[in-house]
Length: 240
Image 1 (cartoon, one colour):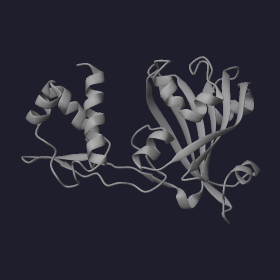
Image 2 (image 1 turned 90 degrees about the horizontal axis):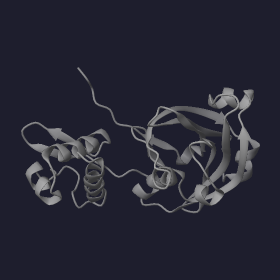
Image 3 (image 1 turned 45 degrees about the vertical axis):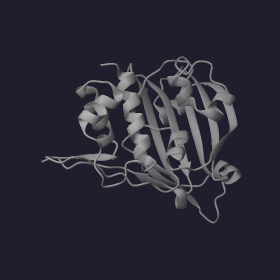
Image 4 (image 1 turned 180 degrees about the vertical axis):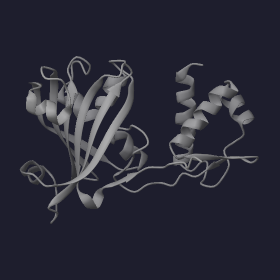
């Protein structure tokens, strides 16, 4: 079963749900209808629907079909249950955003960086600081470390667009797993310099380690968010 076909079906159904072509609490078209529309196998349709369910868009109802349970999320909300770039998150929330690279360097991982990121000492990395503007406000600053042997040829221009699009497009990498830790931390001088902080003295911080299809960690990111614009969304299923 070609994964590209499953991906296209998933993307098309997700787009229809998010744009309310299929409204919340309605049932998706039947498997038979979807098989005919997309000219694919039943297994391909079921895989796309399973991914929609895993991402919180739908829920299978025994004997009835697949009900849409998606609700639109507010600005700066992100999905814990999936891996998405900021570009994808704000597009899903129908918000405007821009990115400004304020620091771009090539480094060799030393003991201090290794303890922070878990990259082996001696690994060559790109280090970036990226300020994220949502609806014109500087709300997030990312500290990114990318392995140079995997994210080959990275430039500030690429980083201001989408590193993940570059990885999955020209470089042909598969982004598979992310581990995340969330903390609350006091603001730093860098935070104060670049973010519109109002009167906040702390930030919500998400630290992420992301792995490719070979199980190699190619990215460590610390993403620092202004608290009033920080909401992460997750969905879970109870297993008996």
